[in-house]
Length: 555
Image (cartoon, rainbow, N blue to C red; front, side, top):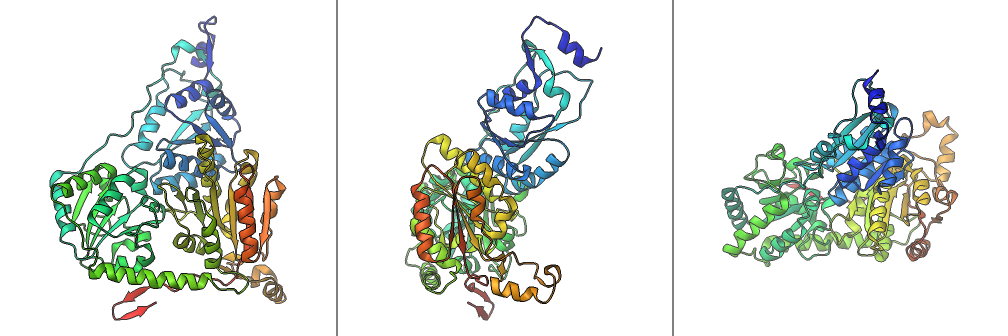
């Protein structure tokens, strides 16, 4: 008799528990609250058991979006969300989400079903504490747990199962005292200091300490895209409107959970001064010294290290002069850039441009809302106009530049807002191309009645597209496969009808007045989701960027 059959037949009078129930209980013991996935053989029973244990299960339409949603839960809560998939194609579809979680350093557990194993019984189910620990300790990331099919349906004596205690929160590590002293000295001696606040600082819940440091020392700061809101975007020391100028001329830059990758131009000239001094604060030793040799490295929990720096400046108070030439340069550039953006936003021509759209959206956005954004120009321009006032309230394509994350992220944020009963809205700003990656998740949004507001900024293409007349004229010269530029999408696609097909509200808007009205109505309705399809100029682009190349300048 096999081990499986022996386990099932022994102690027949004792209370039995299935493998699926053991898995669900193990997850519940590890404080897992959310599971996303698409069920099938052999994992359906796991989802059912999870719901019985009080774990919220959200059935998605694609494993990729499910994985994005689970990873966003990990970022927003600090405990991993679970993505449940079948073997083979299901797992393959989830790989994009796993890669994205690893690049963003977000905790995630993916559970996949596999073929049966006939040689092992249930015993102590220890994989989940190990997976949770691996996902949240050090630099967070994705973990995969493989569940053989026979484990799922196996019946065992309930008393034979031993559950491991909940994994403890990650230990808090601090930087060396000598390195803290050195960093403080470098900051004090800076002529043009700059703090860069990354999403690592947001994940570390370092907002209170970093804000104290900024205000106590009167330092300018620049958030990375998902670092927005750690300190409110409207803080007087935020120099995001002069980003290029701040990066290029700073002589000391302190990185709080921000990596010198493509988002920050690798920390290299000509985007930076050749002799700029970097102070890196990071939880991951392997990250220190990437691309540029830092002047000081502070290895440790970002929140703890920030408090260490504050203690150093408490001992010997210091402030950067608010009336310095550096502050004057930054303020002047911020003023001119903001004026240029405002001029673009005030244009009355139709179709609208990006700045006009985002100006009117920003006017109505609740201050405590979650902003989810993806797309090319849609995300890049939207980041400069749409404000964040709270930490961990902006989610976008991230370090991996992943398109398709938007609806999964929005679903995760909306579920949390609903569970916490905060009344916070989720505004998901999508390019029309980005929406196409996971547009069928609109059905998921409607099924769970999540009052998400989707804004599809529609320029008929990837980067740029054609209007209807130009598209028709182009097709006179041949089949679309041979004459249509690869960046083009079908003009004037009615994406709002995807929402109305599932019972939500859809709007097709072409003017600022229509945009204002539809957004006002969507915000007023807290009971149903909506999609506003916003037509803009197909050739619309972002304003010219400020960047100095030695003696030449591009403005």
